[in-house]
Image 1 (cartoon, rainbow, N blue to C red):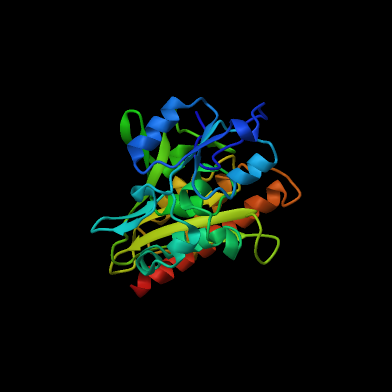
Image 2: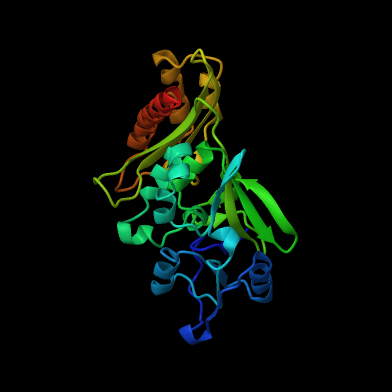
Length: 306
């Protein structure tokens, strides 16, 4: 396992000085992979840098090389075709929130990304960086999982595809290996009567870290029967996690209060949180059930409006 993506993990303090660090800004995926392959294990991908530079300042990391991926076209673009929405790993929150098609198709994902930091941070923080920083409380991750996102990962052996929920290994750790980095995120294009939503609970009204986050996506048929569903939770386990039991409770049914009660129970059962100053284990488990119901309801309302 590795933590080479922008802000994708913390390493112990090294002995390198600022003068020992190098910087490269390749213009192709292949050149970025080659730069990583030529470096030692202290190389880091640089996208937005909003986490990485904090870690550098606090001497949590001491990279030998920054590989800046913002000049690679595949990491900087949002494309929509007949089947997918592709978001480059170095697309910023501000850029995603200004993309009208993405906002229409994936409101939950866009809402989640818009919660990352202040307006100033939004201009720098990237979707890929927030994912690969691998914080259990990252806002974008449950929304991406609920939407069925997969990561396009480049490495010495070419491209491979990994579901977002399988990319995360633990707090500040990903399952990227060797000289790999995330190029983009591919999300299935929602069909008619499909929609997503994301909610989080925080102690303050803004600019805070999620105590619990919940992402939901549903598809309804013409009769209002749920034909597909995904629910994901953040900040209640070492990684954001998909809750298959919640989907099973919804699929094939009209989602009424009884079904929602089962969704909440599945969400609570999926939790394995910690006690800290932001919330107790019992509180986080309770809130996970509440947010799961609310996120599903919003997704249903959006799907019915299509």
